[in-house]
Image (cartoon, rainbow, N blue to C red; front, side, top):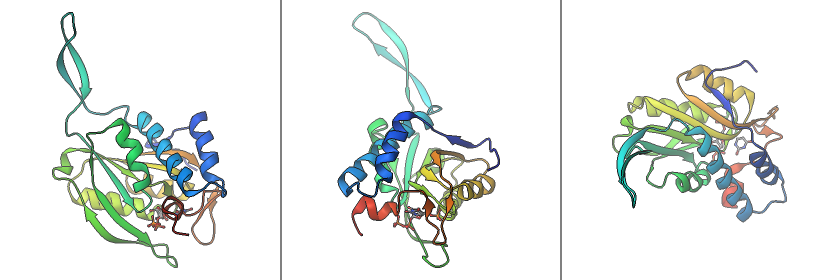
Length: 212
Ligand code: PRP
Ligand code: URA
């Protein structure tokens, strides 16, 4: 794959360890859901390094001091339904005040084209740093459409966090949206003929919600 300035691989032994559990077909729904949430939390710690901050005055038991905190009302998390929902709680552990929007997209099983069926976003989303989350970045179609939709709503600071990505999907998003920082924990080999990532972890939505 070509090198892109806006693509960041968040490689860490702890994330790799958790990924190995998530990939295992014998991992059951409860543990799978927990692991996806934990990986999302670890990725958020790194990908929000440049989170907007503000200076506040704090009084310690000894004196007043100026301290830096995360800027109020500055962050929105937007999961792509369904599977993106599995990443929200982990990120909210670190940013409990973040607003959460939802974009519903499903891939047509034949064409692999995404179709929108739901969209509800926080007010003033155009003023926030928006983190789109979806565990799987396969052809990149769903992520690209979600980002385009957010741009149409005026969003200027958009990031994308996906746990597992195929090179073709990363390339598509990186080239369509060069202004968007893309964070993935691993780049897998390729897609199979049905658009599934190899080695991947299977269908993330089905494994999070136990639907198959
Ligand atoms: C999966 C996944 C992504 C999309 C990735 O969703 O969660 O949203 O496919 O594929 P792409 O990069 O080729 O667009 P799916 O359509 O299976 O819906 P679900 O989350 O409701 O299961
Ligand atoms: N969506 C998934 O859930 N898994 C894949 O491997 C590709 C798309």
